[in-house]
Image (tube, rainbow, N blue to C red):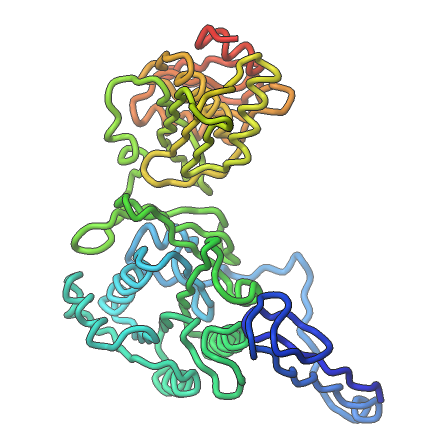
Length: 455
């Protein structure tokens, strides 16, 4: 028999070592290291030979199965992000900053489910049932037949769910759950991993759709081990800025639908309201053409999204000018500035640069490169683009402009909102639209020279 090697694991960060210590070297926490019980070695050869198992069901890639049934939440934007609705026997993890509206969104969805005749249980580990009822009163949901419970003991929660057999169970939040078989504090890596495993196993075994709420760290990632995100079927992030009323529900993983899909909501006094046409809402406050303002035709999942990119360039009194970015990648901004200087001869030395994506939206696709470059050049040259113009395209390190995917989809969204001109990279494939004039550019120096007279 192989000799067992002791393994000690930190309950705070999950770091594993071969010896015990009072302080974890990885995270610096004290008294969080404990020995982890070894896995069973399994039956011996004789036991395996004598055991009578059952054969796995095998099929080939040509076998056809019907798509999984869907349960519509009644919230169209949430159904869109989920790929058409909740799937029975699925586990969904929803993460977001504190106070961003996760509990509000799920309570509204739970009420819609209950009004449709489905059995819904909402378990809160952070609030008393009276607090949940107060929120329901503010949202006008007090007449919905949602079953409430305030509990953190996972054994009691699972016993209740087994007996009640709901169609949907919402657990808010997984970091507050406590399993008595794990010797660690609630919220620790061990507890979160064990609680998530038990809840996901329950969902698969009983055919219940389970939604878990997860806290996020200061880096914006769901707190706890990443294995939790691997366990569940769908991972959603609820994003937004405290100073803006818009909220973005983003799918980063979905086994039953497209990832990177987004749903847009507006926070109001009566809760979260759906935004059917987010492009029109994000651009509704645009004034007359101003230097540094450019409209970008983006794509989030399958949804085209037009947003305003704002840039401000001002003389700096500092030895190292400021580079401030909101809603975009700061590293990519540095790359665009470097390409403008190296390939187009347009420098930003001695200038502070501020970049903002209006509406609190976060843009991640490279197609925004050309729009960002246009906003920077517009602010630097104090020259505004025409109000009815959209811009998109990827900028390479050589200064060349590269086409991006789904050009037609972006142009159709622009036409729908009244835009009549677009600037895109050369080689972009589109069928042509008589309602919009498409101007192509081969590289960044030509773009800077022809559009802004710079370089």
